[in-house]
Image (tube, rainbow, N blue to C red; front, side, top):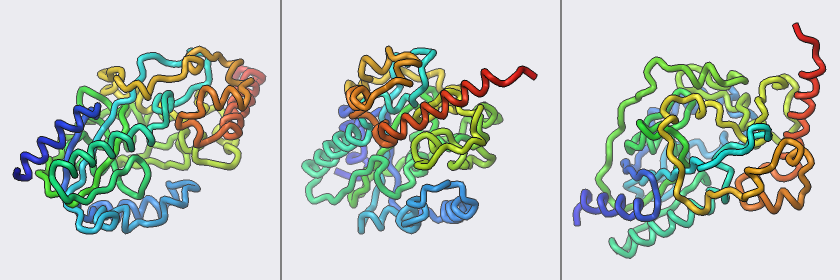
Length: 317
């Protein structure tokens, strides 16, 4: 079986496991990204996520993660939900509605790698689901899954961006795919809609200003400078995806593990503000929201409530 036939087999198995897309690129150092990464870090756009400053060499070259690597298999898994939260509820990013995506993706990735190894013999491989210093969006772009939009997310024509990315790095030689055209054009919807001005020119994100960073990654108090700009997001943010024209094509996922706990969709503003640790564990204990934890979520809810109270108390101009 040649590289082209092996690639077709891998893509078929990925589809059977429920992946939306599967693309392949040649494992190499991303020389073209080195200067961009250095500039981004030097400008402090990583906020307080110091872990992004480490292992830059590994981040740029997957062969340092797997010696002898020849191929990067990029995969996408849809998470767009069938239903949304109540309109009056503080908002959670859609990707966190269901079971923690790390676990769901890892299970599928391991199954795919096992199938590859059982079929093609002695094959080395490592699986990654947002769990290692790897530039997953760039690899997905190189493998033809889509293009990197102005908000820094991967976009796919007639699909949008509501999907997770994951990778398998392997020493198996596969036929590589090529990149696709950028279809953002002159649209600036995501830049214009970002309430904290986190989306800059040249597909650059000032992560330290992003609502997702402020509500998840930042462990200290949310700076008061962001009052009036959070738009009721208590975990993550989907604003730049909601306004993206390509996301009008989003279709609900078919993954049972991504179904939300029934209470998540029914809780109103008061229920969220009064949430106990017991309710948190029951409704969100297996979701990605556990990253911020109960106390982190309460911090965000208090910030939103105080912001709302101050806004209501302020005299109209």
